[in-house]
Amino acid sequence: MRRRTVWLLDVDGVINAPRPAWPGRIATADVAAAGVTYPLRWSVRLVDRIRDLATSGAVDVVWCSTWCPDAHLLEDLWRLPRLARAFTRRPTGHADMWKWAAVWENLSAGHRVVWTDDTEVPIDDADRDALHEQGEVLPIRPRSRAGLRPADLATIEAFVVAPSTGTHD
Image (cartoon, rainbow, N blue to C red):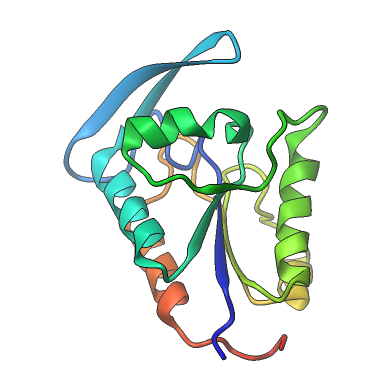
C-alpha cells in the first residue's frame, strides 16, 4: 500500500520572493489580509507546477504558513484549488511551533512529508537527522530572496512519485 505524501508549503520566502529563481514571467500583486496590504512577487511557472502537483492527486498540498487563515486569497489569486491548512487560526507567538507541530503530526500519522520553508526547515545536520529519524521526509529550505527553484520542484516531483522506502512503516 502506498503511503500518503503531504507537502507542507510555506508562502513567504518560498513562493513569494523578491527575486524568484525561475525563467519566464514574474508576477506581482498586492493582497490585503488582516487589515494589512502585502506586496507579493512570484514566478508564474512555479505556481503552475504547484497547481499541477496539487491537482494530480499524487500529493496532498497543505498550507503551512502564517497565511493559513487567509490562504483563500492566495488560492484565488494563483488559481489554485482549495488546499488543506496545517492550522486555521492566525498563529499567536512564534509560528515556528505551529509549523513544527504540523510536521510531527504528519510524520506521526505515517505520512511521507515534503516540507518547504525558508526559515524553519533545519540546516543543522543533527536536526535534519532527528527529523529523518521520525519518518520519511524531504526538507527543502530555499533562500528567502529566491524562493523555490526549478531544481527544488524537480526534487519534490521525484520524491512524490518514488516508492516509499518503507523504513518507517
